[in-house]
Image 1 (cartoon, rainbow, N blue to C red):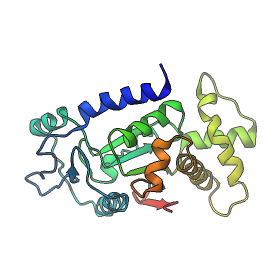
Image 2: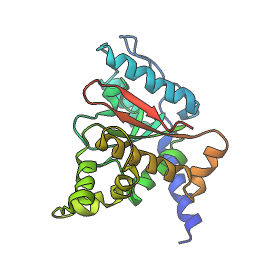
Image 3: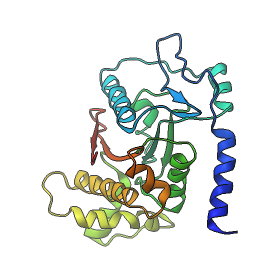
Image 4: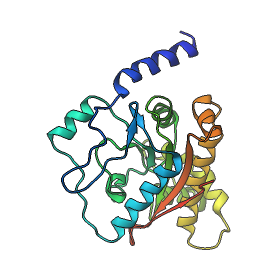
Length: 241
């Protein structure tokens, strides 16, 4: 089957499930407000989506409690379709749960997670689906403090270390970031982690597929990087332009 036909078939199938319930944008009794939608997709601009994440993290730092709707009503709404406002590429680390770090609810973040927050074919296809079918206006790539995958890649470079099973192959894409970060001032692991994020952000910004390039050219999509500090809970957004 030609590539264009396969893509059209995929998008047609996605469109059947992408329209959310009418009550999607309603808040909960606690005052929590879900991100607004329009015509079955997020109604936010890229900058509005980014600011919503920043606001949520600021509130997370104050230990302010939040109560996103998670009951039967919300589950039924999401059964009718999803309309996330951001695709999030994050590490699998159990200490880095994106919904909690940003105070968001069910169905609001389309999350792609793996050790080291790298983007392989599966992750790239997931991001393209989020953008092309679900219409997310924002893609965030986030690394974090004390990332074990990045540390392992550093050990490969600095100590010629090897790892069993598929772990070695998993961290191979991080090695170029480790090499690129050498000599930078500051904590070596943090610098390598940030370099790993920046490489992925640049890859997504320059991807050859129109599905990611076209909405970026027209201002409908933004790709940014972020770094999460485990000690403070703060998310530092960078590579925003």
